[in-house]
Image 1 (cartoon, rainbow, N blue to C red):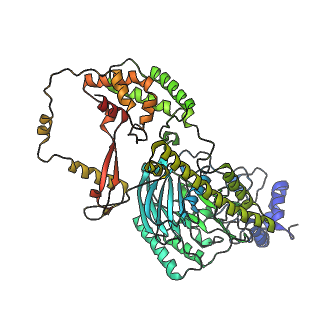
Image 2 (cartoon, one colour; image 1 turned 45 degrees about the vertical axis):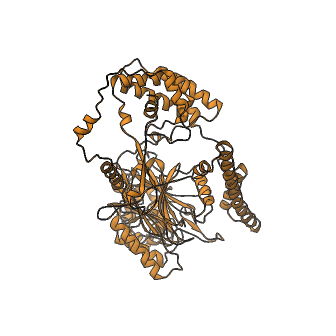
Image 3 (tube, one colour; image 1 turned 90 degrees about the vertical axis):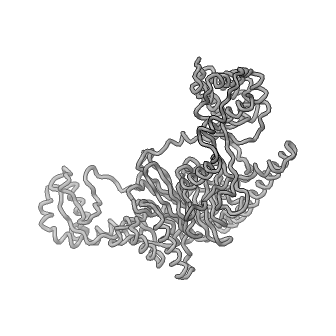
Length: 640
C-alpha cells in the first residue's frame, strides 16, 4: 500500500495501527518524496475555484506514536497554513457566520444597471425591502449631477456626468443619516463617503471601473481618481464596487492582500487591480472566506454561460470584516449580484429599535378609536399630580407620542403603495425563472416575455398612482401643488457652501456656517444685551387671565393640516384628533407655564430648514430659513 498510495497509508496507520508508526518513521524521507503530489492534490484541486493557493512541496513533520491525538504528534504539512489545527478534528465546511452581530453593520455593493428613471427606482426600492443592509454602494446609477437626497427609508448620494452612462452612489439607511460626515464626488466612476460611528471614522469608496473594451487611458484615469479618493480619506478605508477585473486564484507571493480562495483565471485587468491593492495594502475580502463556487460569482453573461467574480470589497483593516457573502435573492433586473460584508464597529452600535419612524397619523375610524383609547390610558398613567412644568410637559409629550406609535398605528401595510398584486406576481415569476438552471429555448422565450410585461406593468402602476394622487387632491383641496408635493419622494440636502477661503463640504462645517450666519444676521448691533433686556421689561401689573379649555379648543380646531412637525414629531392632526382627551391636560400645562413664568426646555430648540430661493446655491444668502417649533408651544402662542 505504501508504494501505491503513501498518503492513504499514513492516514490508515495513524487511525488503526499506531504500533507500527516507528517503522513508518524509518521510511520518512521516501514517503515525503512520494507523497508530495497526492497531498498537494488533496489540499488544492487546480480545477476547483474554491481551493486555497497551491502549497509548496510538503513533508511529514511527525506522526503519532499512539492514538492519544496530542498537539505535538500531529500530521502537519510544513506550511504557514495548517490544514489540521490542534484540538478536536473538524470537517472542512463553508465558513460559518458569527451570530453575535450586535456591534456590526452590513456594507454592500451592487451594480444596478441604471436608476435614471422613477420606475427603476421603485423597482429597486421594492427589491431591497427585505434585504438587510446599512450602507450599499451602487454602480452604474446613470443619474446626472452630484446630489444628496433624503427619502423615507434612506439617504441617496450619487454622482453622474455622462447622460445614460456610468455613475456611482450610495444608499445609507435613514437610521445612520446623522453619522454621515461628508460625501465627495470624485468622478462619475469614483465617489467617497465618510462616516463616523462613535469614535470610529470610516471612509467608504465606491468604484465602477471601465470595461475590458476601454483603452489604457480610461483605466489610468480611473486609478488616478481612486488615488485622489485615498488622499481625502480617513485612516480606515473600505473600497467596494464593480472593478471589471478577474483576479483568479491567489498566489503565494500575494498573501499580503489575498486570502486562500479565488474563482476562475486572472486577466490583465486583474493584474492591475492587484497592483493597486498591493500599493495601498488592501486586503481583497472576497478571497478570505471559503464559499461554494455558486456563492462567489457576481456577474453572468447574457447567455448565462459565463459567470465571473468582478465585484470586490477591499479594506486596509481586514480584521473588522466578520463575513462576506453574495446574495442571490434580490428581485431586481440586473446581470450582477449583490455583494455584502459584515463589518465590526469598535463600539457597540446603536440599537435600531431606537430609530423609529415619525408617529403616524390615524387614517380611519379604527385607528382613531385606538389612538383615543390609548391616549386616555397613557394620560391617566403618565400624568402625575405635579406642579412642576418640566415634569408635567415630559409626561404629556410621552403620552401623546406613545399613543401615536402604538402597535395599531405602526402596523405595516401589506399592500404595496404603488405596485399592484399582478405586478408583484410578475416580479416574483421573473426572479424564479431567472434563477432556474439549464434553461431551454421555451423558458428563455417566456423569460424575455415576462421581462417586457414586468417593465410595462411597473410603468402602468406608477401612472395610475400619479393620476390617483392628482385627482384626489384636486377634488378634495382643489390644489395641484399639494399633489406634486405628495408625489415628490425626496428632500435634497445642501451639499456644500462657500466658506471664507474655500468651499465647505462636511455636514458639521455646513451646520456651523449656517448657525454663525443667522446669529450674526439677527443680532441687534445697536444695543447691548442689557439694553435689549431692559427694553423688553414689562411694567404692566395687570393680572393675566387664566387660559380656559374653550380657548385651547378654539386654537386646536383652527390648526392647519399637512404641516411639518417640530422636534417633538407631534403633528397638528394628532392634536386635533385627540382634542377631546387633550383639552384638560393642555390647559393645565399652559396655566402652569403662565404661573411659573418658565417654559419646558424642549421649547428652547427648533428645527431650522433652509429653503433655496434663487441665485448661486453655494451662497448662504440665497437660502430662506424656516424654524419648526414644538407644536404645543405653537398652540400656547395662539391661545394666549
